[in-house]
Image (cartoon, rainbow, N blue to C red; front, side, top):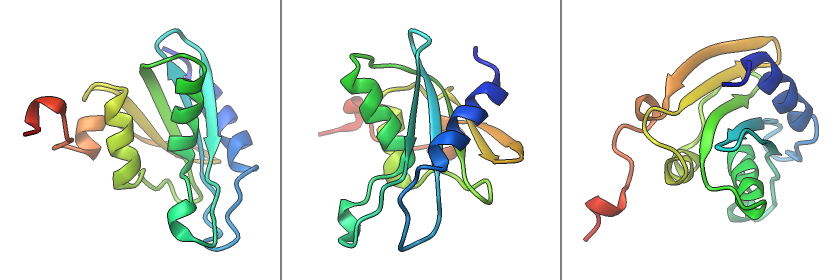
Length: 130
């Protein structure tokens, strides 16, 4: 397991690159893949709000593009320690188990560490579909 402070540093660097002219809510994310590689992401807004992508999904898409398929740790940094949105939580669930630790942080430090099942107790799973 990687030190949370190292992930916080990576996420804060990503947060500084966020493009958020509409909400002004800059988000950074850093995750550790199953192989131990670190991937980061920031939110990128669009005037057509459906075209916006969150920091968490940016990091996950980058991880998948690099050939990885498993999230081992995730840290999200916002100004107020906010939680990932529902869409991001469902995408996280696609690449992690319910016991994944998700750290919610501000640039000053880690505030809370919760499991994915704490944040999304009833994720869609293939065994619950149709």
